[in-house]
Structures are given as C-alpha cells and as structure tokens.
Length: 141
Image 1: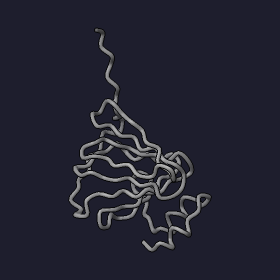
Image 2: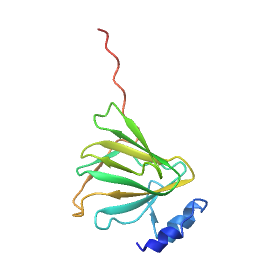
Image 3: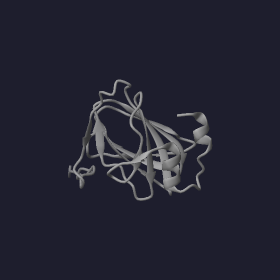
Image 4: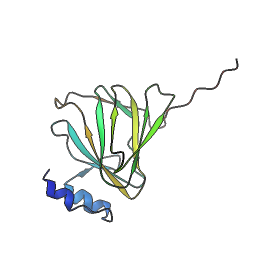
C-alpha cells in the first residue's frame, strides 16, 4: 500500500469513503478488510461492528492505523479477560497463539493492521455467536 494513501484518510471521512480509498471489501460480518498479503491484513471497523471472538494457531500483532481508538479484548483461558485501548499513544498489542480475542471501534470507525506469519498457514477458530469469556464464580473458603 503506497504511503500517500494514508495521507488521504482523515478521521472525519465516512466509513464507505475510507473503505473505497483503501480498496477494502465488505466482509460478511459487516466490517471491511483486504485480502491478507505477506502476513498482514487491514480491517476497518465501523460503529457497531464487532469482530467475532476468535483465536489463531499463530501469534498476531494488532496495530492501530487511523480513526478512533479501539478496544481489543483478549482472554487466554476463556474466563479472565483484559481490554486494551489502541490509539496514537498505545498503538500495538501482541496476541499469543490460542488466545481468544475480539475488537470493536470506540468511535465512528477504526482502521487496524493485523500481522501474523508471512506463510499464510495460520488458521482461525471462531467461537459460537453467543460466546464470551465468563468469569468464574468465587469459591467460599
């Protein structure tokens, strides 16, 4: 992707205009993305878009690129969860192999780059649509 393309994107642009400028296609879940190239894909999330809980058999790095801050939630054990807010100040989070994660924008739209192995051999497992990490009940001592 040519560097000047980033310069043409402004936070006040409409989601459809950002997708068109970056030549992103609409995914069945509603968000926009490109095809993975050399282990990286761009994902554009609009207000109300939520990436389904998922985990990969390879580590990934999530990098905020443009737009509003976004929340990346991770759960290594399916019970405990932690959320990261990615934006200009804290723009990259590594997600380990097998860690459940989901992502949503905290504004009109957010653009993120997800980087994994360049081999293209990673596989994604999606959770059931109604699944989310459920905290364990406290036990009486």
